[in-house]
Image 1 (cartoon, rainbow, N blue to C red):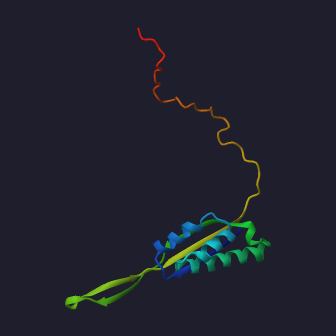
Image 2: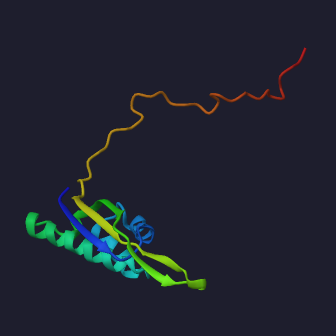
Image 3: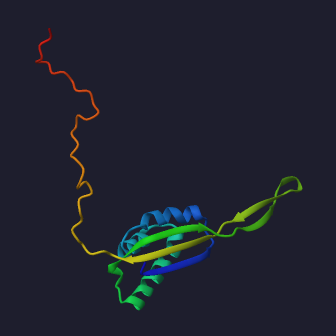
Amino acid sequence: MVSRAIARYIRISTRKTGNVLDLVRGKSVVKAETILDTINKRPAIYIKQLLRSASDSAEKRFKLSPAELYISMVKADKGPMLKRYRAATMGRATMIKHRTTHVILELDKIKSQEPQEDKTGNRKQRTGNIGKKQKRSSTTVRG
């Protein structure tokens, strides 16, 4: 983790915020900013501010440009609910819950393009016929 930013008590539900976060999770900072610019959702405004704050912090502390960073972790947690009441029929009152969200965003440095080892290095190559019944060919002679 290079940089971390937290936004608390955002007056949007966690579910709506999570939908926007899924679009930028794991992306580079530059790509995530362009996605947040083009999307027409209210949580995108707050997430963009949070992303800029984290990238500015990384730039000041570690002299890293936003092109060298990616979003390593981002999550939306539930915050406290503001409970209000509204008049209902027959003298009753119904509760309205205004939900809040805490968003945590972490940036990390993009790893250099090193040659990666094969994940299947020690495994045998699978053939297509394992676990399947083999069909008889039509040229076999039956007795």
